[in-house]
Length: 192
Image (cartoon, rainbow, N blue to C red; front, top):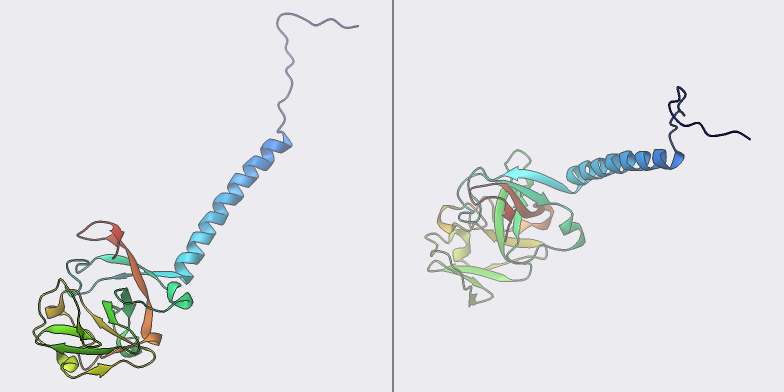
């Protein structure tokens, strides 16, 4: 029988890495890389980032504001009235992305009379200034099966569906919904 020694000992046991601790470390490293990979894949494939050009969406969005775009949402659903959408006019890839608000959806009738927007003959209750120019919407426009009528929130400086070179927007030219402002005069936040 051996006795335990009291006092100093020149021999210490080597510390060994426990298999449980090793699994925990590996799990944390793997989880971190998986989260980074998933974030990159989602950003590239589902979302995109764009800048606002011009003053047409003031006071919600200002020139130079950076917004995140949800491209995935319109795979599952259709654009809804009052959504802020991102589109290329006429699908022209050489143009910059336009950011406007949907005011009428497929099947509705749009007309601008004396600066007031009428959808299906009913004046829209809006908190916007009267439009100085009704453009092509001075005559009644019936939206087709896949067409949307969009206007900027700052109606008198906006180039939108009233313009002859833009007109009603085809669903295939809408890239997504603006949902979050990254950098802007109003700060960061969700877009309504």
